[in-house]
Image (cartoon, rainbow, N blue to C red):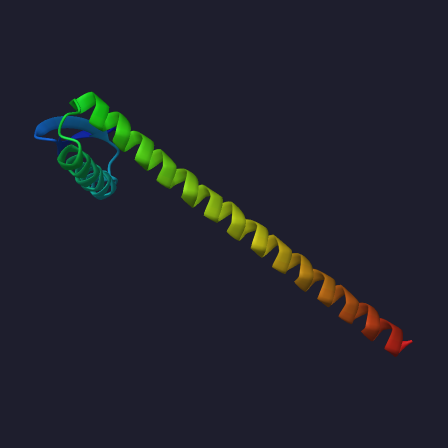
Length: 102
């Protein structure tokens, strides 16, 4: 399967971006969110160049990603702890049942 180009608009410029088939909606969604961030930054800091705005947006998005990754790691740890407790409870119950049966 080959990629085809999708046009997106960021800060008034149109870009043609290669996109795998079936991923057009995801790319357009990401582009819409990026455009919102870029526009917000441009409004708040109108003295920055396009490049500086893009760098600030990338840093903001990177920070958001880092926060989400940390939340996922915390969730994974919680689930591992719960699974460990469940395994221990089951093992104890099986041992108790085994000793009662003897």
